[in-house]
Image 1: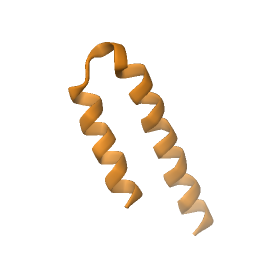
Image 2: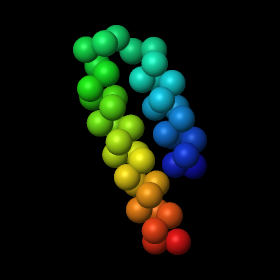
Image 3: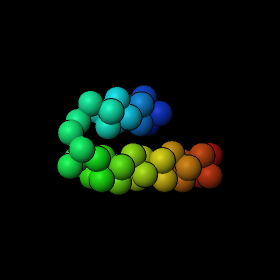
Image 4: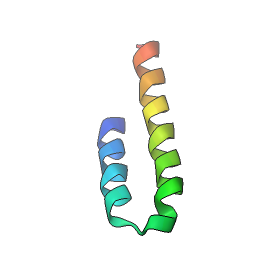
Length: 42
């Protein structure tokens, strides 16, 4: 589920205008961190 969300955010990241890139990058980074934490817990 989280991996799917990360991909969805990546797609939005490619479509949205340049001034939103930094915000989306932060979202993507948070998502990556969440996935890594989840993997570590498992």
